[in-house]
Length: 624
Image (cartoon, rainbow, N blue to C red; front, side, top):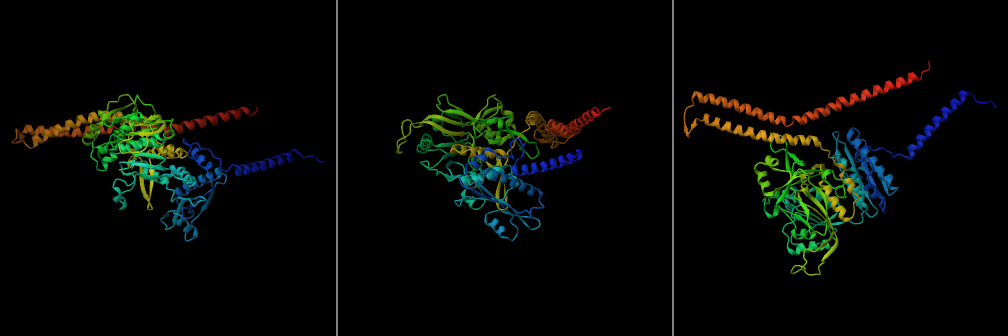
């Protein structure tokens, strides 16, 4: 047999290599279709552990039907790209479920049964400029006629995409919704206008309450309640009014018998005051003194926290620059506990007029801080701050003298506790009281304005439906706490992925320093301005000792001088306002220069050096 030549061997080797390469790619493509590398900071394109737990714990199959109008949306690149992201994520759910999640895709073309199916299932159609309708939503069904729907995947909630899908699957898999009994002095369920305004379409529930009502059974306790529902999994107390002994005793016994409680009190509820309650009236602050004493915590309704470092920036006047408002707090992850599942994944909370909690020396419970201020904070008098807010809110920052102490705003109480009624049940209350519990579980926050929509969410109406786009994690704190107290924490890791608050710490420090200097100079210039205007007015009207006199040449010279001074002072005032942003603008310019010039230049130099080294290496390899 004639042996093959080297040329034939080479051709055979090339053919074999190509065949192996193609076979390898086909095998990889079919075996690892969902493989990807997620380099985002919070793993937004990787299924979270909570999602994986929900999928693993599915007992019965769930059918997901993804509705998307491919042809109608073909000219809208953003919608088409987002739909691809949704589709990829849904396929990742199905692949992870090993058959427990059945995914079906439906293209509801116009005037077809699939379009009728979409509208009948509650999917919202969005009209386009060409008159077509885009359907872009999801329905879910289980084996026992359970049904959930996402009417439309709004781009405003893209950061909450995984949470929305996982929550839909979780609701379909949960055999029964947990129940929350709610005691509140705030109109959480009706909004500020009350039931009548809500019926007329002029008001709506607070967004956090709406989320709770969707995920749980909620029962609002009547003002004259005397017992906590026996089937309540969690008792949520939000800014309660004055409670009777019988009502306080009912809460006491509920907790001692193993009930879980989530409590929000407030030294100065801005929600309550915006509802028409007088500042300083009993309805504007709230506390549970007898229960707090038994649980081992202290709370002073006369003091609130002012924090220079965590102050929110607000526009106090139309002309002036944004200024720090230290009684409105913008708390970031450094101020939130990493050790508790309720706060471990939170990024930012926005609170207002919050109080401070501390453990009592006589406490038998364990006091664990969840949310706290910075060390640039102080406790300030509530009445004084109310007065200052109404008269000169821009001067509040100058009144704060930081104590160097970090104040606790929210805490978890666990461990043994005794009844708040050691002498027995109040008169007229029947039953044998529980005197002591080995392990209570209560979360307390010294703020109720966490529920105020304006501090954490933008709510827009899209095609007749309200869409909530959060910019802070206020809802996540409340719902995480409820889920944790009911024993379910799978959704906790998902809800906070939408809010990536990465503040420019150096910029905030520069702004705070500039504001302090600006305030001093502004006050001095305004004082000079007022004095000069008064003297000018006095001269112009010819007032001298209360009598009108003629204007002499010397007075006219003085008037002209004062007018020049007024112009100069106003120019100086504008310059001071301009200087307020000078350092921030300089820092922004430096960062822009680094990103636009220095970084590309560095990359170019690196590429040139690398090319030169490679060329030199090849030159050395060429034999002489």
